[in-house]
Amino acid sequence: MVCLRAERGFAVTLRRLHVVDLPTGGGAVILDDVASRHVRVLRLQPGDQVELFDGEGRAAEARVESIGETVVCVAQGARQVTIRRARLVLVLGLPKGAKLDACVRMATELGVDEIALLRAERSVPRWEPTRVQAKLERLNRIAAEAAAQSERADVPTIHAPRACDEVLQAFPDQAHGVVCAARARDTLDLPETPTELWCAIGPEGGFSPDEVAAFEAARFRVASLGATILRVDTAVVAALTLLRDRVDAVQAR
Image 1 (cartoon, rainbow, N blue to C red):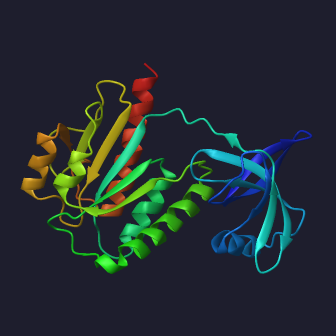
Image 2 (image 1 turned 60 degrees about the vertical axis):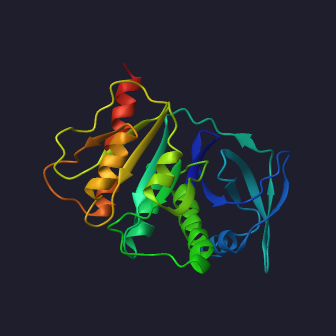
């Protein structure tokens, strides 16, 4: 969770902390429990320099002012961090156990803007309605920590699990969609520069034939990630890395 700042010809390491509210004109910022815990774990002291970011594309250099029951920083004016890339949405069939945490963390590090969780036919977990908010808050904390570590200025939006047809209703007309399926004949490729790119990855066991057909009907291209069968978290890393590489290649033409 560090970034580098040039100072007198040297690179100075700044610890990065996520905050909910970053004042535009600068001023005192009271850190929440998670960010305060990071300050203590990192053994920061009053006077140490940090970088605060709000997860919505704004960041500011700041100074640790005091460390008590809560940690207070004094921030400079916030600056907008320009993000020049195609918008990337991950549609993820709800996986089991800790794999969801890993997928959210790695998708954030790889630059995903939005994660749409999908109640796939082969998804084993079923979220209790009374636990949805708590589970989303936990995933948002994981994403914020991953954004800080990977030096992102924004944090992806994470949606509660929805049915396949509900997710596809939100698919924009101008977007390009890819659904990953085992043993598909096509490979990941982008014929043109997309402004928004959706990548769908199924849970353990993959998407059902009916779900793949629904994605195809919504203009998604069915593509393979290779000859071997990948675990969900491995597929997320492989697909997002390949797509980012393809986007960069198309934009460089």
